[in-house]
Length: 420
Image (cartoon, rainbow, N blue to C red):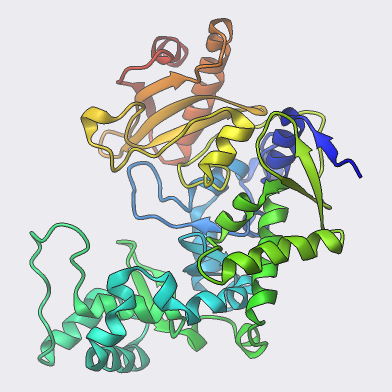
């Protein structure tokens, strides 16, 4: 039986609709911003918001919601994550991420298999520091919510290990931090909130995750992986097995086969339908709830940690965009810049801009801006105009008064003209 076929244009529109990026943003009533219900709904649609400490523009988990909703109050997201009963919770998902509380039980297999899924220094902590681990447990139980710095201070006052020297480059975490991160990874403790310096405030999981979620228990590994694959499939609209695995970083060890079986089961029950995406490699699966809008009309800057950008092969296959984040690339080897955001214009990614929030100066700096190679020269002025509008809106949301182009790129002259 022949598979249904989608053009790449149709597949792009399916993907953007699934991600809440097919329609222009709609302002709230009487010009008000998005409601808390809308913020929560957007996160439910996405299924995961990756967290990253880089703050050159805005925290990684804040931008995807802005891209879809516009100028929302970030305090709404903070309240969803830090006030009981919590609606979202921080855990290891794609990477460190916010997920709806209903997703917490589906990640139990990762917490149990921390030796395979946590990175080396964390996975070794139980073996290397068993006594300190018990002390950290006692401190969190007695004093939580607490930051790693507070736990370290308590331990050091009691004769515990000193901090590593500050000139030690890299992950020079204290023993207290390593213990906390292991307990966080395994789910024994959880993040009750983040403080003003973006440090986690740790507490016992039963004081963070809603009681009814914990009381319901966790499904077995196969059912959990299947649940995560379905969340990923709905969030993608149309996806390959690789895309689905990557959304929650499934595929190491035994979970690779569980993920394949999950897709097969979802196909058998009709949740997924195998399709061909013309001129795109791989086998694709269309979610039964996916829609194919006649057109995609949203304009949005996409963070390097946006779910649309997660899987670079997918970005290339659907949008003809070759993208890599260049934060860790030496300055002289960077092609597009340090913190580069693709610009979505309708169903196409037409440009990318290296952005920085110069907060003391009240300025959104465009440190480089490039049109995508496929964009015809005749369309660059229209893209520059659309990008200028998007940059002004972003600057206003960030509390910045102006946008200034200070760097190179083939789109820089046209963008400067639009901003002048």
